[in-house]
Image 1 (cartoon, rainbow, N blue to C red):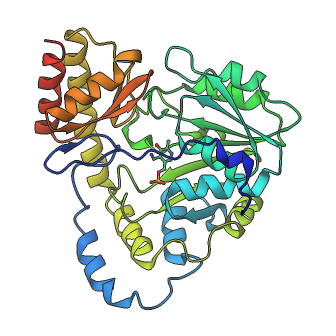
Image 2 (cartoon, protein in one colour):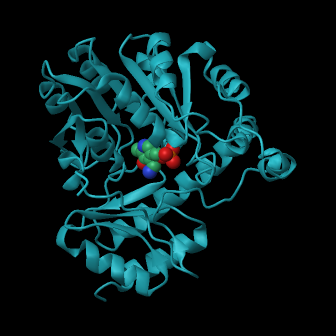
Length: 348
Ligand code: PMP
């Protein structure tokens, strides 16, 4: 009998948002607007070339990302989605038994990827549905190698502010890597939620993680990246699965980055829909924490499964976290209206 790693045996598998034929897909935090205008044409042009390997260094994409952020290309490392980059970061700094600190609940890949890397997850409970950065800093020990700060936090949608983030970074020793995961950055209010690259980007132990899967509408192509100190980016590149970012993904991301005004326009539509949806949910009596992302969080505790089932029966797929709450992605206006009608009739 083959022996599997005991650390993986008890680990829950990643649960992706469901898809149901004919139902509104509000379970996976995707963009509802489809591909950005120039992307489909470029993909069609390139499709015939995929019998060849992609550019291993993703040179054009790395250059475009670096220009977008105003940093040197040496500071960029890419991966097949920011999920892969999370894994690359862990593999770069975590050895057997090392500790990885993150808030909980947060992005469900963190504990899985931590265990795969051989690390030990240290989960710090949220406070008011928000990362408790004080408690997270206090949880850092001599064995801690990496801390994930998911801002805004998935699935609770809340964000931490500038002072809290800076104080946190001041308290964490410089030999511990702080990974600020900004997957939902484009939906956050820049007045209230700091851009970690601007705030902490000059620190030797801070990495900022971004993705093309949300606001850039490329979830199916799998591209993400980090902006890191140069030496760390070099390590992160070594841990990438060779050629994991396909040529189509690289080129689509370059085109998408060139369409920032359209990305911002769509994000503003989502933010407006989010605020309207939250308002109407509160008027129905739901608790809705202030979201800074493209989804809202309903902390329904023991009612979460029942609420999600009610929505699914009404052809809207949402994402329940059993015993905790339900995450609802902001979709097209008609999808959000369909969801709100179901929320209004729940137990009605
Ligand atoms: N970070 C956070 C906080 C996320 O919510 C997600 C997607 N659910 C990711 C990273 C990974 O996204 P991707 O791998 O598609 O870039």
